View 1 (spheres, rainbow over the protein chains, first blue to last red):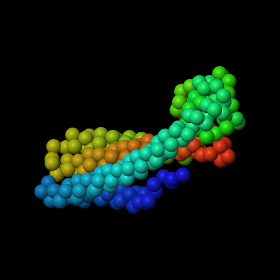
View 2 (spheres, helix red, strand yellow):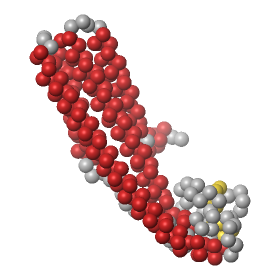
View 3 (cartoon, each protein chain N blue to C red):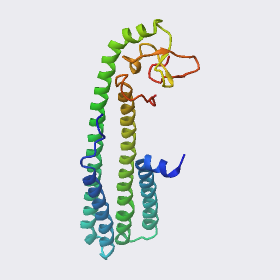
View 4 (spheres, one colour):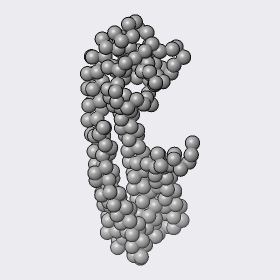
Length: 137
Length: 96
């Protein structure tokens, strides 16, 4: 199984804390200036830190979304692959196409062609078994 | 469910919700500070400490929440992949 992406998480955390600390310090520094003109630089510092924080968040979410998308494609490809094999295998194993099946020892009932039971030894499922959320038998 | 287990499992949502709430409070306090004085030199520190900090915290909170959603999806894909393992593999069925 592929691990959840963790690389760079510490840097993101450090960057976010640094940006927030910069904004807070800019607020305190601006409070020590008696005129609005002298505070403009601190306002700029605070806004720059907030923008860097937002950019860091955006990059992090982009990394996670790309990783999740790649993972989804891999799993779907595997599902499609097993569904191709599974239609003949599972239905053949039960002997009755269309009847819900389940893997012995497990709790969900599936359609015979459900990819989640493809290639597994299955038995006819009782009607009261919990239906699979993937194939909705 | 045990609160500690729930907090460990949902720490990113707790962090996200907490950051959004604190950010909203910071914006409200900043607004009160700005409204309380007519001088721009006294208002600007409230703008920085209230509005900018609040917006940054809300950004952090939303990022954490969206990250939690993606992690949930990752866990579901884990479970589906686990179910797709050959029949002689470990037999657990918690997906769907």
